[in-house]
Length: 214
Length: 411
Image 1 (spheres, helix red, strand yellow):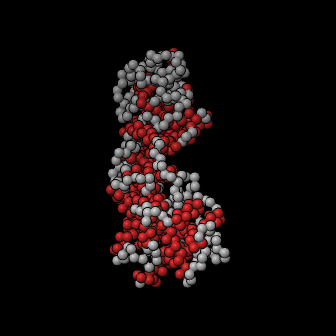
Image 2 (cartoon, chains in turn orange, yellow):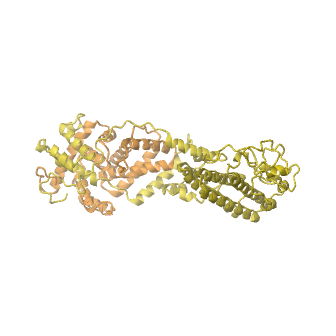
Image 3 (cartoon, chains in turn purple, yellow):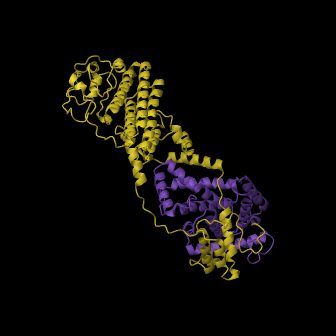
């Protein structure tokens, strides 16, 4: 994300970011603060998409940034901070699932976990507590529906969707984050969207007719 | 199917899908993109998938709740302060910021109000170096002479206020503090001159005059130990103002200004050894330098007036010399016909040159230079190819799937 300024090039952003990283490494609190501001929403978006619980997402986001802080020295600059940071986020979520007893590769449906109602109300709470001044109401509801449907995807599919669309990473960055090739990411993306569409159609109570998203 | 997704080479539909997303991201009209997608096999459903992706891109990004955002930042700053040592720092001021009181400092940093909070700092306080650094930044950012003059005004006023605050708190006035005040006013004069604006020059002169008065008042009520320094400072300012007004040349470079702090040293042929009353009342002519007999009774003044005098003598300049508008009063062997250098060697800086913070403050100089260096040094540009698949913008405020024959329902 280029700070929403269409005139900024990716190269500008990368240069700025490199400078900030170097300064932060040397203890510059202001530089670290800027990096934090740039990434906190992206990390949070990824985490909240994956865990579907705002409180947990906040805790995990904090974990991620503490790890970032401590690991900054060892971090190898390779053009962007995003893949490294989101990899930490991804691993933090996986660790969370392990701690709470869910295996990573299982589909994480609410029904399977046996707490569908809790999950729904968590999502609703999450949506309700959002500042809907920022997010239009229909987007908020839409997000809830999409997030709920995404829970039925495989772990890898959910990761790709979260990284690509919640955190806004590119194919390249997503591939770096997940340690896979760009081709594999595109495949995952394709199948994730297909599965999601299918799930949304099921949620709506009917098989999706051709050409119909809902 | 699962195996296929992990293969490194992408399936053709996956490529086409991503390509469509790239086109949307690049700002291409959705209608064109859908049209092309529909050229393919209908069962691929690429158009609705693309639309779904756009919808996700629109609604999936979340923002952190504001309270959480602020709290986490504060926590992180505390951690940062605790675990990281500033090292290899090229910026002198950062070394001087004491690493301590993590919580207070961290909260201040986190709220981004450091500069505002530091604005009331006094010499010797924790955030004072930050205050000075902020001034340097302002100076470095002031690209025109007028803007620089403006910043110098603020800096000069800040120095005066600091001295006033210190005295009112009973803190002993340090020579460095006085030096900084004088330097700030020199910088102001220089900058005002550099801007070439008579109004600015008049304002600068007014500022100096007010500072001089302020110091004199302070001196009158200050403890005895500080009185001499404060009066000295007032005298220096007056001299500055006079030399500047009379000749339009630069004031004495600070390095050449002898500082007399504390008890005045005994001088040969010194008359009165106490300067205070004298400087406040001596009827100095408006021309630069001390000329005339009044100078004689002020040994320090004479000293100031002619730092390069062969002997630090208070000998009265010959009346003949005194008639020259701003000839150096003491027996300076220099050329009377040369452009008058008020009371000393010609300052090295020229009127039109607008300098960064004056040399008496090497720290500040280093800071400004560092900043300039940092903002101008070329960073290696990473050869990032334009990224495909940037966050998509949906085709329109609500991401309706365009191919939808019945577009009645919003998604």
